[in-house]
Amino acid sequence: MNFEDILQEAGSFGKFQIFMLFLLCLPRFILPFHFLLHNFLAAIPSHHCAIPHQEQFANLTEEEVLLINIPRDFEGAFSSCEMFSEPQFHLLLNATQEPANTSSVQSCQHGWVYDQSQFTSTVATQWDLVCEQRSLNQATATFFFIGVTIGAVIFGYLSDRFGRKIMLLVSFVCTLIFGLVSSASVTYSMLAVTRTLTGMAICGLSLIVVPLGMEWVDIQHRSVSGVLTSVFWSFGNMFLALIAYLVRDWRWLLLAVTLPCVLGIISLWWVSESARWFLTKGKLKQAHKHLQRCAKMNGQNDFGAKINLEILSKTAAAAAARAKSRGDSSYVSLFRTLMLRRISLCMGALWFGVAFSYYGMSMNITGFGLGMYMTQFVFGVIEIPAKLIVLIAVNRIGRKQCQAWSLILAGLCIGANIVIPTSLGTLRSVVAITGKGFSEAAFTMVFLYTPELYPTVLRQKGLGYCSFVARLGGSVAPLIFLLDTVWKLLPQVTYCAMAVLCGSVAFLLPETLNVRLPETIEDIEKQSSEGKQQPPGDVFEVMPLHSLQK
Image 1 (spheres, rainbow, N blue to C red):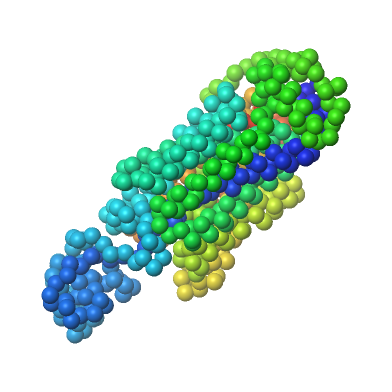
Image 2 (cartoon, rainbow, N blue to C red):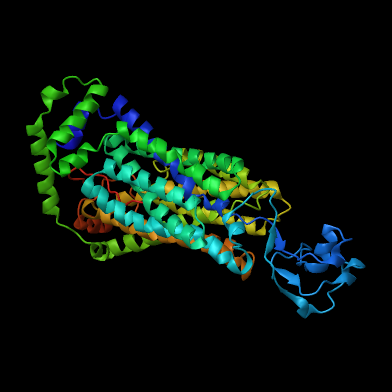
């Protein structure tokens, strides 16, 4: 008897599973609060150089003071980063004249004045992270994702060793602590360190929630449970827009998005540890206890008479023997054969492109004809139908075509907004929202596609490798916006080109629609030569915790 048979006796998808998934939706709801917080935390409002008060300005209006002290850019707006070394009083007579001496333009000498109509305070205004220091402002997002990258390695290992629930608690508590400390940061360095630690901590929520939910349901309902919790990411995305709209100071905003962790900590009281994990560790009594709880809630009152510790012992022993016979494959094995090299190289490029484009679009919520809060909200709304469409399309069109075209079309939407004039705000908004939908579809698709490509003996390591590459994409994405100093459109061109190129790589991968999972490396090679996958072996598998959840 394998675990799927045991779970069937306890109720494979009943009240217990629904209750568990409901509890696990809370951490998924909280995740985008921090993953997409950079849009508001480090927003740069309109600003110009601070102008020291002088007696000769006493009779001038604010507009006139700016006119004689701040040069204009080619669009006629006052410069954000430059000022005249000496007031140009002749411009009061003719504002279109050139300054008396073009060499008199210099960088801001006395700080900046910020428009506070939209934000009371942001990280950028707190430490003047604008102009020459703008790269430090963008780096706050990169620091966070570097922490997420490190956290993926740490929590992936610790969750397999100490259990899902305890590490979920650690993740919640550490996220709460580091989030609160971040909101009290007194220097930029302190903020950079605490945001990195927050990224490390919150990665536990990202890695553990979906696998823990899937480990309590049967094979037929794994996709449903995964999409259900994933939808709550989109709800959190939408709710972030509301929180940011109501809280305009960065310290209070950090506090507001961190406090929901308290509810998450409380909710863990009712969350059950994975019975699959207990069996892999030989903890038969604990596994039986949680299975009995599952059976009781699902109305399977005769479970205790059918399943006892002896049966669980035999199931665990059989699974351990099969795992031992497969061997302990290393990450090097991902590139051992020609087919595995193709899969690993292509999936690495694909995951990088998916994360790169998703966060590139998610962190660019201005210039589309909608306010930044409404854009954030709509970007969250469009993700929900995108996820549902993916579930239908992948079973009709196929994995490879869906994966390739979803990312390519996301890139083409970015490219379209490069050429669409800013005056056509409505059209730009529609194109941007459509592109965001394709980007989310690509992200959802890659989770379904990747486990079907790797054999069982390498599936966890394959997902771990893909996760690492995707985190690199997420870390680099915020820094690409700095390329606008070279050419204003260069960031959008980069996002467009990367999405199209990485999406095209998917055409080199094998199709997995209506074929069974490969079990060994040899199965992968047979798949390459025969065009089909081999039957699956043991279904008693603990879901990998190295996979990326945004």
